[in-house]
Length: 291
Image (cartoon, rainbow, N blue to C red; front, side):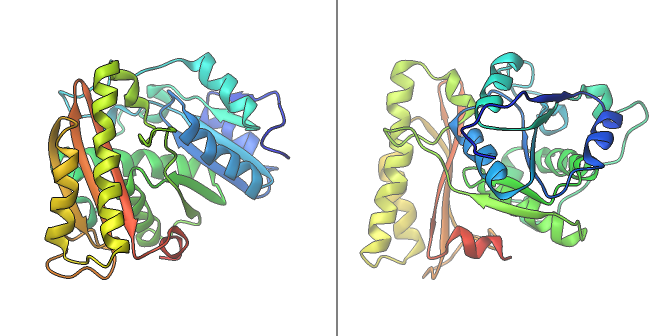
């Protein structure tokens, strides 16, 4: 089915309904989301539609991945808008569970990720990746997808989930997909909605710093410290930089000295928004998908 065709999307609210839906389905592509959809999410959905006999998205704002002082209650929610976007993208079905459906009374089991989740976002947001891994493992068990699609923008999340799938021998292929950017270069994010006009203009320094590092890489720069400083020299104009990391894309351990491959990632507070962005150097997403 073409991603541009319009379909009447099936709304599924319970695990029992989901299991009934999954029974006759063949290859299924799955895009887990927290809603507040943008073109980055829709690119994942369109890929899932192209690659599989059936495509399903989920919309669930997962309380377990938010810290006590984070934006769980303020996180943007607009179910009808999201459903209209999914229909236009050709998505066949959407899973819309309640918190009680995903975390029934007495549920205290959590998937605790390993070393790859201990740094960067894992250090900045304690418990975040345990919440991510737990909800994705639950969703994988419920949906039983053939392939699941995740964007490069949340690079550490992508690698944590790839590692979880391998470690737990889950029967699903994690498909990494490129960052989708606005015409001015800003990485699309649901949290961009928090930005005022001036803040959004300043936020362009984030992609600008990463682009400067990518150009330096093409010109032969391989020193991790030099690459980090190249990013910082531009990106600091956006707001309060929390970190700029030059890490190995597989292990996410910081590179010391010469980098043969790298993911340069950053986190920055811009007004009320905490924004992430990255660039992958010396390695392709296709190579990453084979890990």
